[in-house]
Picture (cartoon, rainbow, N blue to C red):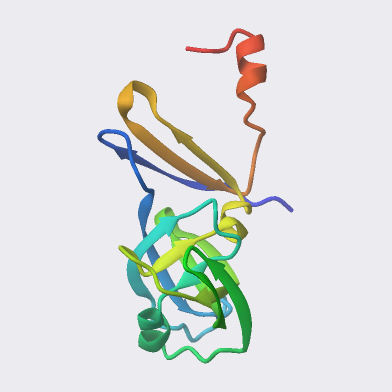
Length: 157
């Protein structure tokens, strides 16, 4: 059974050097349960170079998260062993991703890093027409984006 897609679009003046959005994060729980976990509102950086989503130690401490395991993490500064947690992530426009495994890491300019584990649950598009960045995400995926096919079929504006 396919659910109705949910999406958000962010328009930025000028060409963006990074993609930041608002983000809610909480302990993993079933959203249909009677009791809910408090949601921390914060900033997320979208990173196609990250395999797994990451949270800061501050987020883990604020939410009282308890690691369920440890894993090796590779990053720009090398590698290390880090904590793994289960969380729910709420993206703009109420797009929820349940029971996501995230790593704890050192982040600059944000508290959550959205990696390919979340990006690939939907469609992720970045355009830069007229020097302005537009970033859009939807889940679930509803169709394929193929710029080569569009050009061949003469569907270019």
